[in-house]
Length: 370
Image 1 (cartoon, rainbow, N blue to C red):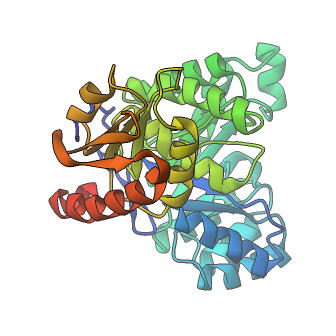
Image 2: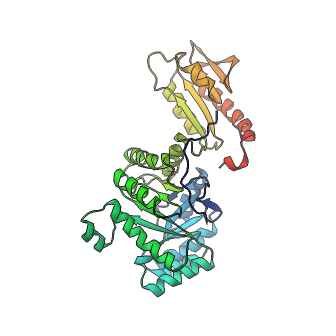
Image 3: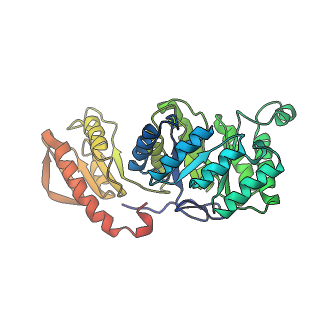
């Protein structure tokens, strides 16, 4: 069953990355970044399409050289999802990818040259209606800030961010979002809290260099969960040393757990015990694998026995309660006369879930289907 999130979002201004609205109450966008060589156009396009298939709203592509900029042109022509061009130091690359259709420029104005070069990039972004993301990272703070603070601190990250914000303010450019990422959860969280009080622009969330799939997912869920629960954040990326596709899945799972944004099936499943009447773990894992293509938000409870099964089924779109040889089945909280044979639950449930997803999709307002 659908439940509204109790979280009150931080007010922010609105920008657009391609056709994706960011800030001012828009759905929190989930993004990832390609890890292929950008000059390998085919590999990069293939990865972008894989990210599109699991629901990525935005994809970031690193553009470190002019050769990469030429490749970006071809990549952009073959991509449906908005692309952020990630650029450091060379303002000419920013101008080139803007010409080639970048939907957003990820730059730090202060590290791409003198005032004249910065102005040329900002003027180009303004003329082509391209927003900018200021990206501050605890691992690459300016030398004078490290000398001042001795180590990355929230105050250091925010001061770095505000330097870049001040440059854009001085150039009368307000179409930007900001990130202050760090690999330490508490450092990142406090940095975002402080920045959220100082600017009105959208904030892009991330725990940078979070780690491998498991540890990085946990660290990101804790850190981003704290911020999102406070209403802070307009876009997010889960930074994992793993397949970028997993970043998108984890990002949506975090939003789903906070009832901020639902995409796909929310499986409610017991950890299993000796009371289970069927293989709960195997059933849920196989259904998750088979049903990744479903984007309709649904709650499906799969409980191995009658202790908690009926209660969970009452508040789910579909529910299964384990029984001896056959299990009880619920639709919209009502028990059905039919029972499911425990020997082939996966096939039966897959068919039922797909059919119900089509029905649920008709009930959801258009703006909630993302």
